[in-house]
Length: 232
Image (tube, rainbow, N blue to C red; front, top):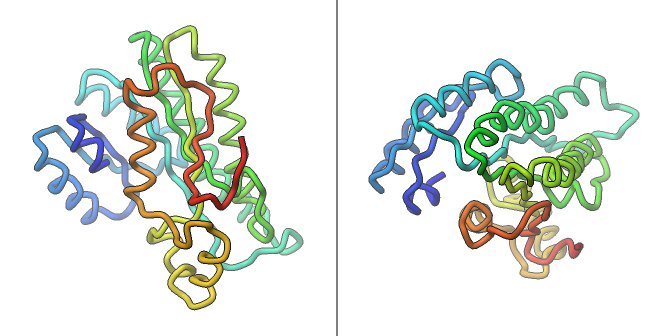
């Protein structure tokens, strides 16, 4: 979000419970002279996504770029035979349903404009699977398949759909693992570049896909993982 504001974009971003952090982001990003607004929404709920998209169009007048990046992950190992139906459903609701839902409401505006960029965020887990986190991997694999299908479905409307698939990134979600001795050792061994990525190192490729530099790309999975997973 900060990088988009630095590039001169007006931005509406959602938050669920972190109101103070959202307000702080608003203030920091607004220093670049663009309109930046937080909108409270539980993106796992269909109705919240409708309100989020409508609010964005009302405030900004149009919708050129949608970055769909909501996600949760289970820190503790969870074998499939111990995984409850609720644990499966909660993961799919946030990680996959939210992506479908916000795109569902955004696409009519983009069709009206005959232009748009949709950038869902997947994961290396969606490409290789992940033992003991199989529902997470399945949700992220679904995003990749959704990207492929939507890219051909929406191309005739001038809408480009490309996905970014990060590996380990130092965020609030993954730091409880990465900051342990075992987690640090795991990351150094699994990632050829020897460290997790930063949020800024993921934001840069997302901004690239949103820019005119990516005008002839659609249906692509952009891997940003320090070399941890090499796939086409």
